[in-house]
Length: 356
Picture 1 (spheres, rainbow, N blue to C red):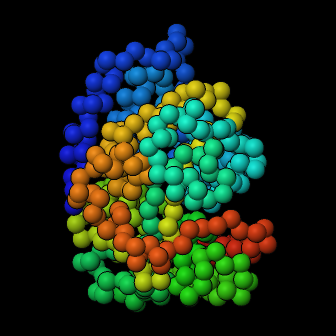
Picture 2 (cartoon, rainbow, N blue to C red):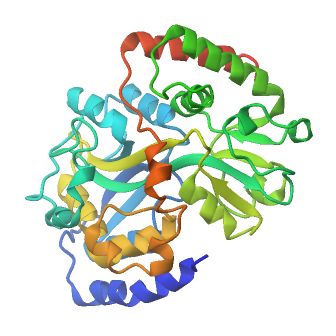
């Protein structure tokens, strides 16, 4: 596996020169604060420091551990919880229709010219309102030294071997756990069929005794899959590679039924009083050398074509980061659900949570 530290060293000099040679664009006597609502470990702290010094501002991150929780935070604050938000593709149009989003075009963000246009057209409502951040897959991470038979199917996670009782970790998002249970049964992850959702719910209820936790796993040496408290987990591709830094027995697979092909986007909130800084930050992240550095930090595929040219062949040829066409053909992107389907799924999730 490529070394993250090598990528930092390679791109660090250019970043340092940027800080030293350019004058602050937004320097004022009173330091301003830019707030990002984000997943944890999904932003290079050295890039944040560079931007803070460049603009003489304070950058603050607020974290969420599921798409559901992020949506709840924004609904509770009517879209005013942050200046910038990382949002999954399926929810961008919902945010736009709520009038939460400011424009995001090449006029405000010149480095948008480096973005592969297919990601701007991957979901409704994206173009003109959201900037592609990273893309990847959802699959299974496992400890090869703790699992007798490597998982190949989602059913290996949902109906695990008896030896794995209490050693399974799941995410808490209903789209993820219900979606992949649906795929395990041969249905679409976006199914709105009540009977299919009921069948998937029964799979999750039967799995419950084997599950140690329903939460977003920490991505450091204290992670339960690193320590061995968990042997198998539902996990995002780059997170598995990040944890592999701490234990080489951690591996990742997209199951035979396929997983979720997701795209995350950066959006500027219309309520923000710091839109100029928000646009400047997105533009800063999409400078090719910064976008390449960030990709190496998070272990995810960048939508920035100019950045890809700066990445090593080892990174670009890693099948976990850039899956082959056959793997991608089995994966599904989440689509917005009709209210009836959302209600049915939420009822199913309530049944599962009552067993916690």
